[in-house]
Figure 1 (cartoon, rainbow, N blue to C red):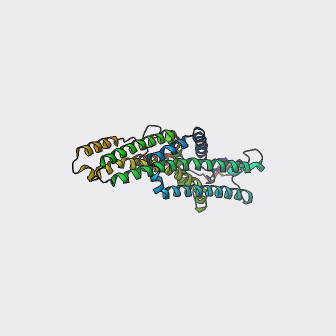
Figure 2: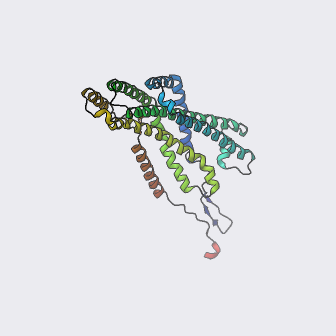
Figure 3: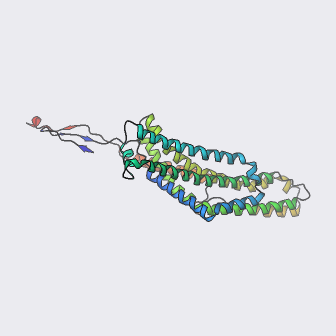
Amino acid sequence: MEIVILGQSRHASLRLPRVNALTPPSLPILDMSVDTLTVFLVYWQLNGHMKSFHRNIVECQQGVGMRLGKKLIITNITWFYLIIFLEIFIIGLYNFFYYFGTTQTDFAIRQSKMFYYPQLRFVNSFITLYTYIAWNASMFVYIIYTNAAFLEVKYFNDELEKLDGTADDVELQLLHKMEAYGRLCGVIRELDRIFRLYAFIMLVIIIPSVIFTLMMLNQRIHGLKDLIICMPSIALCVYSFLGVTVAPARLHDEVSRSRICLIRNESIWFPYRRDVFTIAQVLSSHMEQYDLGISIWGFAILSRPLVLATFSVMAMVLSVIIELTPAPHVVEVVNCSTSSIL
C-alpha cells in the first residue's frame, strides 16, 4: 500500500499492488515436500527395505504377475524419465529468462541473491534440480512397488477365477492358492509398513498445496502467460496427489476382488464335495481382510472412497476460503484541496 502527498494540494492516492503470478503461492509447501521425500529416499536405501520387499514379492508366485504386467511397469518407467526431462527443461527455461530476459520480477531477484552473490545463482538451480529429481525418484519407488504388488494380486485373482474345480487335484490346488494368498498378505503388510508414514506425510503436504494452487488459479491468473508460468506448480500438485492415491486405491480394489473371484468360480462350489467345500470356505474366510493395503499411518486404508472423500473436503475448504476472502478494493485518487475549502 502506497500513500503519496504532492505539494500544497495534498494529493493522496492509495494503491494496492497487483499479485504477480510469478510468485508461487505454495512454494514453501512444495519445498518442504521435496526435502521430506529426499529424506525418505535416503532412509529406504540405508535400511534395505526395497531389496527385502523385492525378494519377498518375487517368492510369492515367482514374479509371474509382474512379467505378465510388464506393460504397466514400462509405462511407470517412461513417465519417470519423461518427468525428469520436463524438470530439466523447466529449470533451464527459467534460467534462460533470467539471464536473457528484459524484465525480472522481485521474486527472481531475491532468488538470485540466495547465496548473497548473484553470480552463484547456478548453485541454486543445481540444488533445485537435484531435489526435484530426488522427489521424482521417491515417488517412482512408491508407485512402482505398489503396482508390482497390484500385478501379483491381479495374477492371483485371474488364476483363481480360472481354476478348474472338476480336476482330481483341486484340493491340492486350493491349498497352494491358500499358501500363495498368505504370502501375498505378508508382502502387502510389509509394503504398508514401508510406505504408511510416507503416504501420511505426503497427503498432509499435498492437500494444502492443491488448495493454494487452486486459489492461485482463481485469483492470480489473468491471461495465457500467467497460466503457462503457473503450469509447473499445477502439474506438480496434480501428479503428487494422483501418484500418492491412485496406485494404493487400485491395489486395495484388487485385494477386495479376491473373495469375489473365489465365489464366482462355480466349479469349486458345485457339485458339493465336502473336502473341496471346506478348503474353499477356509480360504474365503482368510480373504475377509479388509485392512489390506497402504494405510495413512495406520488411520485409514488408501481406497477409492477415501480419495473421493478427500476431493470433497478439499473442494469444501476451497469454497469456504474463497467465500471468506475479502474482495480487493482499489482507491485510485483522493483529492483534498485547500482551495476548494476556501
